[in-house]
Length: 614
Image (cartoon, rainbow, N blue to C red; front, side):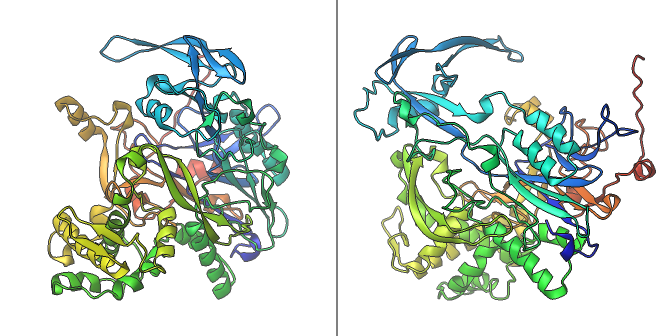
């Protein structure tokens, strides 16, 4: 988001593209909600994105202002270990409390209904381990740091504390956002947005160059000293109970920062001086830093930023990590002849862009994936993956909401992880870890032992192994001829129709998925790129999260604003608008976003008129 003093129109520009797991029907529905005459009884003249079936516009703009969201990443959940002392009781301080039991019937298509009993603690926390094997394993294995700990027996029960389980005013907040016409009203509306916690950005066109602002939102707990949500806590000790919520007035915010722009890309929004702990696991800020650099570079070169510039920033697919790693890769002497060195040579003149047609991007990401497997996989045995795991996380420096400074030092943080979460996913945390290790060429992390006993040790030797493995892997995936390689051939997105589930093993189910699913689409970008088409290095190169939509709002002329959605505006598989926007989205295109009555009528193709009482 950029203030009008740095835009070609003299009014703010606001861009938003929240990242979610895509599917069909689309996560978002594009909608306008317009009263013919604005009044207290009918106060809406708003357009944007909402969730299917949900009234009001969640992200978009009204007649004066615009807003967007990204995930704040605040820690709003807590797992508690509960010692069950009887059929309906559990330990609490020096006595016992009673569980509350309720029956829940789940209707199953084509099979008998299933009835389960849900137990909850006295303060409303459901016992999730009663029906989940993973949580039962947590109850059996999670370490207890307080003494004396009550007998574990066959395992502690696991209770979930989560702000989203408490009734709140989020729906009311959406209607308030739809009507907000200045930053004060916007912050008041954001204060009612209880869950999930979000970064909320704001812009309006009033005054000489408009106004921009940022605020955090959501119910965020104040925890006991030393508790950051990483470990399950002892539920039998009341000192570990939440101490309330961070006051909404104390949540970080900024209005019209001197920098003239605001970047909210999941990076830390508060430094160590902030009196409340929001999360131990901020995004490391790689995307936010790249966005900041692109804005600053554009301002320095031309002084002004256009709507097209904002769209181009959204589509930036630069691999920032590659700028660090590639010089090390090019410094490695490979044996085995041209078969391997020709692949290495792809990196020599690569511009670090992860375009779908780039062979160099495919090779680099394959090297990155194989490097992670070689350096880290065997360091995390199954017994550790299923219980506790320690990772390196940054101790962040001052990070104002109008930009950021990167991590300054690292600390080790331990927590409970599921088995499939222990292997490196290749995201920004692992990029930070590897960047630090590159300056330690003799670290024990740069070692690997094959099943036949052959050992590899040292930075250059392990990088060489990763490049060799990447060459062979891409040969198996795309063929020996590197001229046929491209990042998009392996970095694909398939949109799955979710209501039927993911099992297509039966003939009928498989046929239904073929009729309802769409793709694969070859995509630019990658994990921690601004164009964040994320993939998990432990699972393959397929895209599992992406910009769920894109919008660029021009506060000088709402009818000049643009938007695009994954999928389309219909949930009907045979409707022309079921999936008519996805290829344009994949190609980085935007559609004209009509707002005024004349523009909507001019752009309209079909009209549905609903008459009350008929």
